[in-house]
Length: 441
Image (cartoon, rainbow, N blue to C red; front, side, top):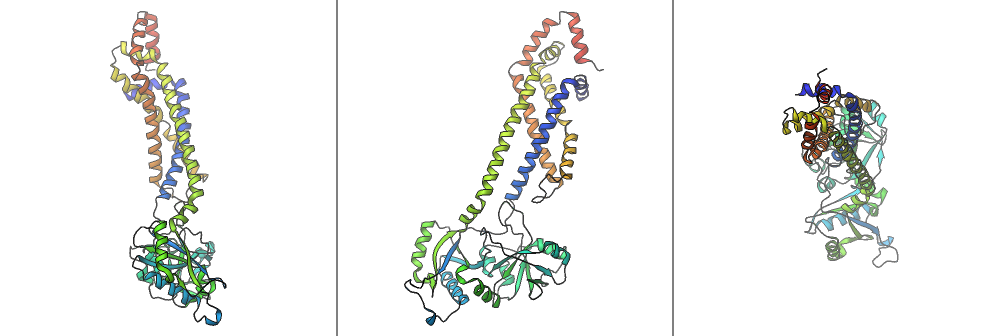
């Protein structure tokens, strides 16, 4: 049957050529759209590396000199690091609180933008020089426990850094760039901020992403413990800290306001106090709002184009069926069964579609060569091409089948048979149809 269909398609190559060209162009456009959607979907649903569930950010400030309870300098007997540590302890003691941590420009979805030059003591310095600088996150050890960050082996990072001074945690991307898969990375040292300061690598965390629309980048965590904690807090100021609290259960905004009211004076240490709270999820919504609008606009455009492609292909094959009533009727007059004719029409349309595959592969390689595909967020793998090609041809195959199914069910095949039976009374007409339609030449 396939061989016969191919011969008929070749004999009708003039009309089929335009349909083939249309299918090739539509397949290329549709594949580009699906590839873009594939990259966005895979990137969005990839692991972030952290968990912000039930986490709130407490806003800190210093009392004004005229405010009630202000402690003047003459009575001030503690430092900023000591005040911040005491505030953390007071809040952590509440039975409703699971954990507390402090960061500086490193909280998830805070648009932190601290960068520093980093070089391995015994690794690939060329990679470090090429990157120039890496994002640095200043965090207390509790940060890893609060945000559920683990090592590449699935162990809690907190257990690797608790109580240790002057250690860092690097991401797998930095580990690969510095050491290229070498074993025993933990325990090696790196320079950061020039050659004046070196720190030991305490752990390699899972990949960390800044948000759902970005890929993970090479970065590291500076653990604030001991002298590192004191110098950092003193440098930035205690009130500039990102004070994060994880509650043991989900809280609404009103419930958290009541929680703060119940804490009373425990939210204040000397002149440092808590004046407000915001869930981390709110920062996430603010940071992603623009990107989500862009994504929604892209999806709307894709849906619009899909609808146009859908009706275009269905319309093309509908008209093709209408114009072939005579041929269909002749086949029925010569003994072809209705179901056989339906199968023939479906197979013919799918064969036309299949012939576009080599052209689409050439087009795809051309797009790769010209760097028109998003290979930054998602790699160009065989699975990616297999899935996007498969989904493209599945959609187009469904559209073609619908384009054939509608006129078939509306009576095109049946009506065509009656017309041609009358025509067959004329031998010359019959010979003409037999030569044009059923010829193997």
